[in-house]
Length: 527
Image (cartoon, rainbow, N blue to C red; front, side, top):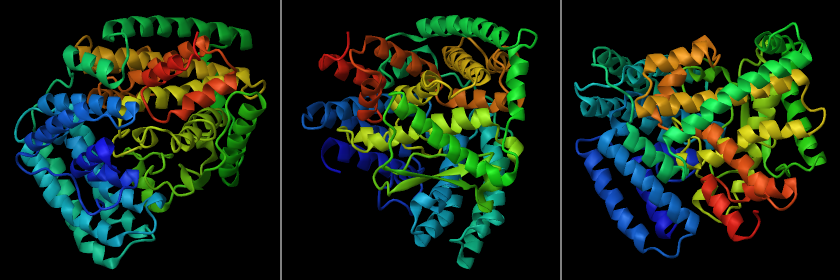
């Protein structure tokens, strides 16, 4: 990687080597992020030097220049006001996935020396982060998430990691030392004073304007989302009445859980069945061309990961490492032995469509051919989220849009499953209100949790962790709904066929949706 993109990635990987592992870059797998005294100031200085280079560079692809400039402006603001190095949950995520990233199938052949090096680095890394945090206030939810993750990782290192096929007896001692470090790190967080997690209006508007290139500010976005939330509620009632006037939409959705594979042996087969059905439906109805050149292998989650997966950001489907993608991806089926956990409606909409088949999987396959070099790798799933969050409007906007797109394939969804999709749309609108309301200071954490539980209908067990995640990544959850709305708006202006619109949309890779709009307009493809 040369030129501006190469310089930016060299900077990125120097400060975030775990991102490098997930992206498939070589030479960083033995390291954890620098957390020595002065690291925040040193990274800021390096970003400012890169700003000057980016301003002079005329050779990089325009999408790369825009994305790099936006990433650096926002990261500079983050380091000045809310540096990730002082978030204890960032520390547990990086330390944990520093090891786990090298134990996933995408990392074969196993780099055992690198795994051993990262195990050995965990105690000093956690000590360094704890020193950076000091005794200052930290949002309580961030500490709680870190403590939960630390407990899960301690158990993994002491017991479950030994079940992995790459395990070496030589790892026992450094794994135990790392587990003890996680225990001590978690205990040290218990008495830290609480802090307001809101980033504030100025930073929030910077993220919306620069990173996501959204033309509307937080206030207008919240107004639009509130209207959509209320409209979706009315539509849910009307749709449910047409299906069964004597049963409310909540009860009709609950009844969908009764439809699932008959036995454990049928669970994996059901994922594969609906993945193939979604591809066929999209192809037959001319909605989008599925990517068939990159494999997708549905497998039960291995025993070594079963207990650590729930508490961590452990995804069933991860984007392949763009710099070394191989020939296919693994899709973990959680709780594969329990058919009750795999309702057909959720398997179809979330696993087969949103993530598999024509969702993220096709999107990732197409991204490999994007002209923008960052567009090929920006949606890499790292320890806490996408590597380049500016791509969220297109990445998550597409996956949510394609769920609804399959409604245009006659017979793919039942009426009750379409009701489920409408509830997803309502939930995404609710997330805009919580995300932007929290960070603008309009809503407290408690008010966000109450809204999710009492009005938006989120599962009670999910509410707190969802709001904590919102608090750590300003405007990220809002991009799901805003991205869908943006794609729908572009589709209304498109001058060609449905398939051509979606294939063109995906051809740009993982970039902000506004860049796609500008390209389509420049080519005369939009009314």
